[in-house]
Length: 257
Image (cartoon, rainbow, N blue to C red; front, side, top):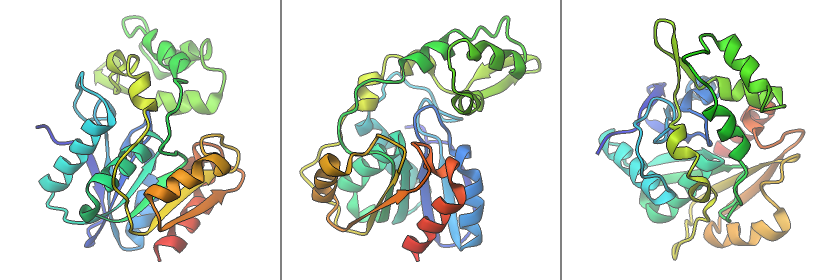
């Protein structure tokens, strides 16, 4: 079984694994990882399958991504880690903690609940599918092309981080769009389990995000994660770690300490 790609920052004994969101990659978290390393953590920025520099596969769901993470921990001989996941990565992290509680010391979930989410990435995936790298030969040209499909500049900049030079003069995309564009139901799937994760858990939400509804979602979260603490990041939407990085990091460190 192939091992997920990661960028490991820091060399201390306290290992913290970060799982990015949909169409992201571990490197999106590099600034936070460097700051965590300065605080004494060894941070693993992991690319999930079909994302970043990790392998591509036609198989894609949370059960499989949980197995990928277990394989990664075994490969690196990590007995117990602190696990942080954002959005899609948060669902993988929840599923992993509920299935492999002995391997997780603490759990942090950023702006996602274990519930089902209806497909809502279709426009973004369609726009990425139209990038023709036979004609588009620069990042500037790719950005110009995406303007026709994705109005929000912040979202476009996030997507453009997935561009890379395959060879000199030939651009490509890191995510496996051919698989991901047909994986809407898999990405939105609920995390369900007979188990509970009874170790310290932090759920962070963006005050301006609609991904977590405290009234309807917190009871289910509390059932699966009875030692949960809920914290809201003010003036932040779904990308809370990028929109309010200092406040996010301060909140994270206060809880970890």
